Image (cartoon, rainbow, N blue to C red; front, top):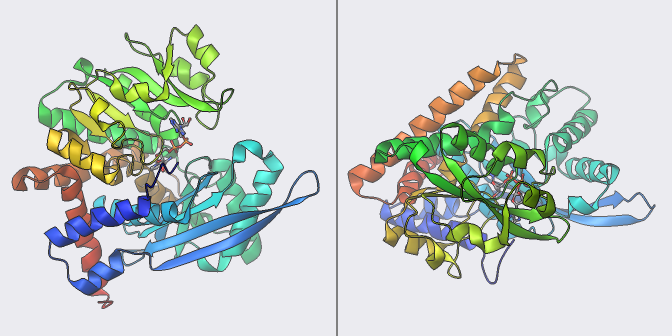
Length: 428
Ligand code: NAD
């Protein structure tokens, strides 16, 4: 996940510092916001099915809670690092602020590879994670959610452990729960659809019809799949997706010039977003090296896998045809490559705006869970579209009126909102 000397936390801090300087943020607020307020580092002993015990390392980072309880996913990943979790927690603060929901920023992670753990080992790991944190998280403190390689099943195990510890039902403790067990309809689609709601608005502003565009997507998990689905429903053509092949244990690009059959690809994708390349070949896909997704002559790139995927090793390979990068993943572009992209004038929908649909729907889920009244799917998606569209318009208007890069404009809105909350509380 972390390539070479890339450090996502330094990347997140550099992005923050740049904008803090631009808006002349005072020193105390700057110090407060450029690092997390609280960090939990802990070990999780897990009894394995063979009777042995393995010790996993877990983290929960609460970056800022001035606007509301911390909110953010829990990742299971073999290359998870504390700095990755710090960066992601920080981005969550900006993400909740840019869509103007009353939540702060947090993130969690466990260094593990769930693909090598059985169901029952994963369950014990989830329960162990919550046992280490139960006092420091909760509906009014810090509300976790799924992220890379965690899903609704993991969330329900975590909820069950939390409720067992406290002896009552607290469905608002965690989001991304299964529908019917406190989950919200539309949550599965929310992040990917949110990416495309903002993309649709960007195309509208540029006077381009979606049906005249093509896209290449990195990552075909939760975000990539639903972004691809809605984008093709709007008339766009996805020519390439890049994701993991579990047999070879490495990623490939699956390419079809006339457009991929997204539904068929989705059908054959495993629960971790991996595709069996032999089956993909049967669908008429060309199997190409992982990096090929970035080099395609398309109008739109949607990085929706992991951070640091566009960097100085490959940024120059982006085709002249690319007009928009919609960042589905968190931190997919490192800071040096971001400068190249900015100078090239490619329109970027920054990660914490583009992928805010997930947390916005999580907020809707929390509202539904806390009131014990659940909305219809259309209602959820309609509310999501309204939130994402108005957040996009506010950022693009600020960018247009002040000749700003989209990422800077989004940061200015978020940092100002959080700084105001911090000041109103009298923290600085
Ligand atoms: P996921 O685990 O469902 O899917 C990840 C996808 O990326 C899979 O298809 C996997 O095969 C692919 N992948 C992993 N490593 C790769 C590599 N080195 N090269 C190419 N492909 C690779 O995860 P997700 O939930 O879709 O999340 C993707 C990104 O979006 C992450 O950065 C995550 O933090 C971010 N995000 C997710 C949500 C959400 O609601 N799921 C919300 C906001 C942001």
